[in-house]
Length: 72
Image 1 (cartoon, rainbow, N blue to C red):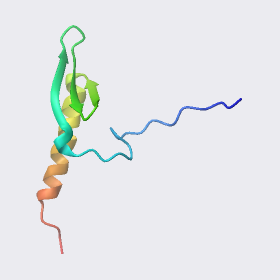
Image 2: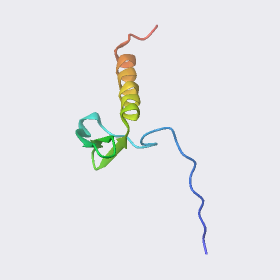
Image 3: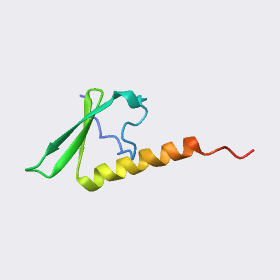
């Protein structure tokens, strides 16, 4: 019988998976749980307000890096 151990947790939202930005759509909010979520393709990222802000901050930083001219 094969036993499996859980994989170590990654800090990436979707480790090793390319998700185009155009697949991000819709927002869910469960007020009774004080949690929200963002729908990406067929996956919903659920989190507290602080967790969703952290995700937004990471995305804004990525956009800023794309806009910066590269040093030659």
